Image (cartoon, rainbow, N blue to C red):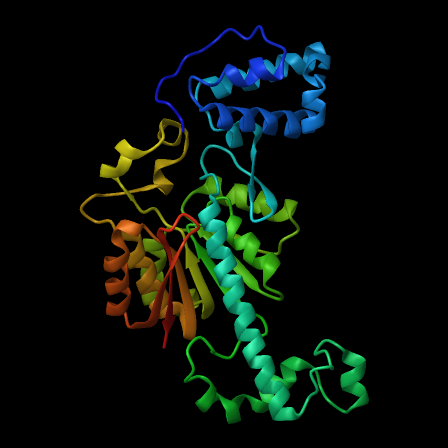
Length: 357
C-alpha cells in the first residue's frame, strides 16, 4: 500500500536492507522489498541468492550511481514499472512509459477468458467436423499428409463444405458461432497494446487491430508488437469519431469476430480512494470518466460493436464493478444477448461478455 507521504532520503546506503528501507515511507516493507528485488534483477541481473550474498556491495561506481537515481525516483513515488520502462503481463514483458497505463493482472484475466472461449469454440466445432466427416480423433487436423493420403482436404475447406448444412442448427447453441479460421479482433483503447498483442500471440491466425486516441500509446504498442514478434497493428483514432465514420462511410466497416476494450471507467469521485502514485504518474485520459456519465465510453463502444461485429460476434469489456448492472442494461438496449459477468481473482465483477445475434 502506497502512503501519501513523500519523503526524500539521502542515499548513502549500499546494502539491500538499506535500499528497501529507504522507500518504506511510501511502501509497506514487503512491497518495498519486492520492488528493490525487481530493480536489482532487471537492471543488474541479481538473483535472490546474489542479493543474500551481498552482491549489492560489489556494484561499480557507475552502477551505484545509476541505482541511486532509480531509488530517488522511487522515493518520489514514481511506479517501478515506469522507472524500469517495463511491466510483466500475461507471461510477457511489455515496454511502458508515462502516457500509457501500467497493465494490471485483472486485464490479463480478461485476455485469458477470451482465449479460453475461443479454444472452447474451436473444440466444439472440431467435434462437429469429426462427426460429420467420420474423422478419427487420432487424426490431427494439421496433419496434411494424412489428409492427402485419405483424399481429404485441409480444415478450412472442410468448414466450407459443411457450413451451409450445419449453420442452422449449430448457431442456436450459446457461444458456438462457427469459428473464423482467421478471426478478426479489435482492441479499443489499446494503450500499451497488451491486450491486442497477447490475443494475437495466443489465438492462431488472428488479425488484430488496436486503436487508441493517444499517439504515445500507439507508438508504445507498435514498439511492443515488434519486440514480442506480434503481427498486431495499431491505429490512432478516437472511438467517438470512429463511431461516426462507421455510421456514414462504408470503408470504415470492420466486420470483426471479437471486439474487446478496457476503456476509462473510474469516476472522478473515486479519486480519493486511489493510490497517489497512480494519480501523479498514470495518464488520466486513460483512467477517468465524468461522475455524471460513467458509461460514456462503454455506450460508444457498444454501439460501435453493434455495427461492426459479425453475427454471433463477441464483445468483451473490463468494467467498473460499481456499474455492472447499468453496463448490462446498456448492452441489452443495443440488442446484445447472453450477457455474462465474470469475477476477477479478487472476487470483483470485473469482466463482461456479450453476443451480437
